Length: 313
Image 1: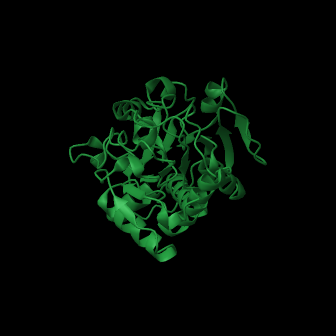
Image 2 (image 1 turned 45 degrees about the horizontal axis):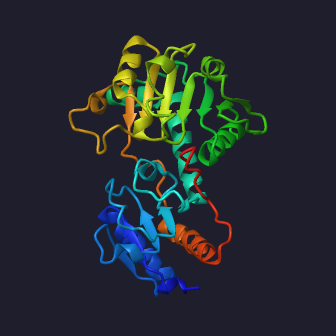
Image 3 (image 1 turned 135 degrees about the vertical axis):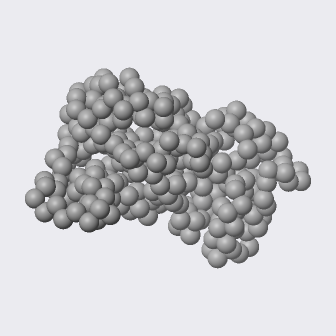
């Protein structure tokens, strides 16, 4: 069995990610040298591929790879690449800080809407002292996607006293939270007026947030999307806002990123936007998981945080 430092490690990611992960590996395991791809000499001898938003189609030359690693919780950037070797395992980062940051973002977005912060921001600009208005909206929060991140947010919102429900293809048992499963989506959508989307991006969820779904909402609903831009149809969100299916939207992800400067979302009065920063992977926490799984691959042992290629997450 090769020592980890004797394996060939290649990272294929945007420059900023390469810088962060190279520094994290150097701090944790300085003997490991990360080569920067996709163009490297003798790609067939590379053992470990660390990937984030790699150019589609660049993986084909890496015929000897033993482990693909997504440098984040999401794996949609990997699943769309037809150059993946089917026998090679795929792992992703699972970091408690991801849940911490994501839940904080979702709580902030919910409270921003529930406490009508946009109204009071406008009131301040116009020097209006509106003490007598109803300052809190009545909300019933639906979490669309009860994976690690969605479940964590659901539990924290429930502990704050909010009425929370969740939807997932398979049944999830969450204390004091009513959950819905496949086939019960219309009932779930009719029961909430704040919809938080945390689903993974897969062929099944592509374009999910669109007019067919919005028309199933019982009352005007506030949309919070922290999943992926490919899950939403932006033209439909704008139409749903105009037609009253949606009361507003808090969006961290977009079909095209960076968000084009001519996008109507920038100036839409009912839309809040952030630049895909709801939750960002901490390389220092991720390196340990990667090293453990690389060792497990070497020993033929079970891996942690593997991805089901059929499900796409």
